[in-house]
Each structure stands twice: as structure tokens, then as C-alpha cells.
Length: 98
Image: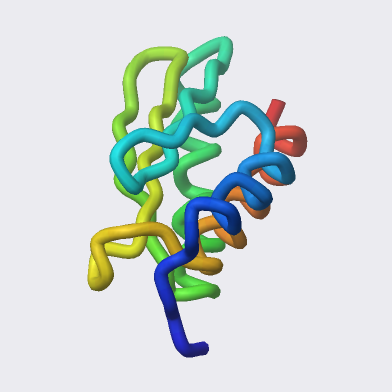
């Protein structure tokens, strides 16, 4: 897959397809809340599997009851199609963990 940086218009369109992700400085962020730490770890482990499958990895911060993600294409220092593919997969994953 050839990766190209998305235009502002393309980013805006993609943001409408994902739930509660926030755009800031060429990066998309989302915070996920869970009832306990083991659920956070389970969620992150599932993200790891998806990330390996598509060879695209988010930055992850794990706290008690909360997982924060930051996604962007490091090589290009901005957002590409792959970032939104990963965000969509993670959104679907969230509902299966809870």
C-alpha cells in the first residue's frame, strides 16, 4: 500500500466515520474507559494483534481504567488512510471488550 498524506478535506471525511476521535496537530487521539485494569490490558493486547496484522502501531498509554491512543503515520509525520483503518478496527474492538 502506497501511503500518501491526507488532505484536510479527506481527514474531515474520515473523522465522520470514526467515533469520538479528536484531531490535534496531524494526529488522532482517543481515550477509552474501562471498569478495571485487566480490561485495559485485554483491550491493549487485542490492539497489538490488529496492529501487527496491518503493520501499523499506535502510541498507547495505559492507566487504571483508561487507555489513551494516539495514531498517525510516523514515517510521514501526518495522517494517512492507514491511520483511519486502524482507528475503525479499534472502535469495533472496543465494543467486543466491554
